[in-house]
Image (cartoon, rainbow over all chains, first blue to last red; front, side):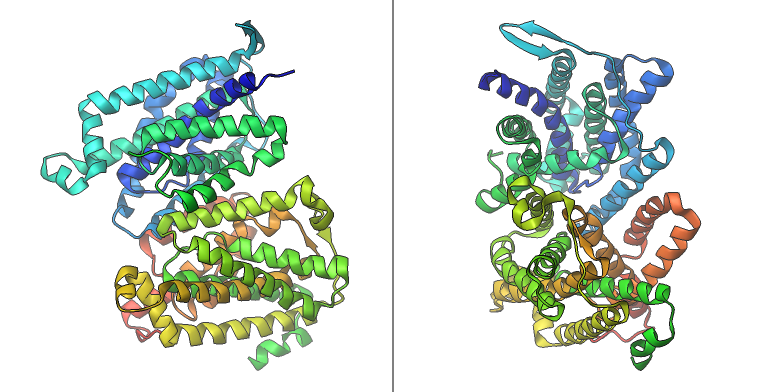
Length: 283
Length: 298
């Protein structure tokens, strides 16, 4: 018999990874002003990165997570400079359609090159007992990595020069510009960071779940729910939101069914937008 | 028009089928356009209206033996009436959030209709195969009629004062409200009309397919394709969606034939190029260049 506490813990571990994805999305949305519908696809790319590194180079997946960060950061920066920066001042529909197009392009290219065969990274299997509960090894390590990355993110945003620049740009980009902050560069850095978070999350996910080209779809739904829950641009809110969504998913899956759990992101979005559109947490 | 009516008499089944699909999507596009193109509220949940109407009419035909000329309008009516309620609640949400909430609604409804709890009515995830007693030429004429109706409604809406009010909502909703325009009422009305037209076409679409299931009925494809078609032709114009539907289907056939495996990827790339360099669509571009008069009537 599984206790409720165990389900909650499971949910929090699940949610920590969702939080990474959500924080990346909300960061980009809040600072750059772009809704990155392709965010889920970058998660997928991160997972494939870990897979191919493991399959071809025998690279320890944990290291993949680490390497994913600078790699996807650069990748994201390029993508931003080439595509999304052009639409910062354009109406929202344009950004939506652009990132929609990017999303389709990316997962179809993935499908073309890597086929629909399910992949996985069987690195950490098995479980271990701790304090009366049983924990899966890969889930625990994933949780640890997620916590580590989150902590690094918060420290970066709070104390580093670029972090302050990013926060300034998100608060008021024109004033930031006047203060001498290179807002274009800040946006590029932010987008890169968002993608880096997605890629790292993907690499972490590769430890636990199957990898296939369309996997991004599930993550973008949850990411939207997280962003709406936490409040747009609110990173701490996204962290909390991720944990909440993870917990909800674990609880509903256990007591109702996995299929019913699929409704959670949609329901969350609708409920929050109707009752408390600015999100559960004040900035 | 006479030409279009006479098509089933001389064309092959392949062409009639193609035209049926073009017309269905033309109505989807125009239906999307009369709401989103004019009010500026990007409706990313078109599939919701389509799927809902499709389900109501298909279930009426399949399980309750309702004759199709009755089932289709009933389906469309059902979805448009629900849209009034949904619109009243969701249309107070602006911009991107509205788009997201419509996607959430679509996904949620799809999952809901697929669950075990509702299957006695909806047949759950396995779908509903059915036969409606109408042959291909009949379907063609039906959708042709609906498309013609849609065109007339789109023309009337866009060039009327109602259309002007909607456009003002797109440009600056606050200013419009200050001028005394009932933005909520107008938005809901446009949403209702959009849902009805799209629902009619949807019912015909699923009858043509003789099958409906949640994953296709509410798929993002049904939302995205009309939007792209309208983008092609020109958002907010009358002819734009129709032109876009025709153009797009042609390009689609070519892409599919030449690049079968990569066709979706090419589609995504096309979207990117379109939005970066031709956001106004073909008609918008022509109006800007002066090739076409800059009137709302086109």
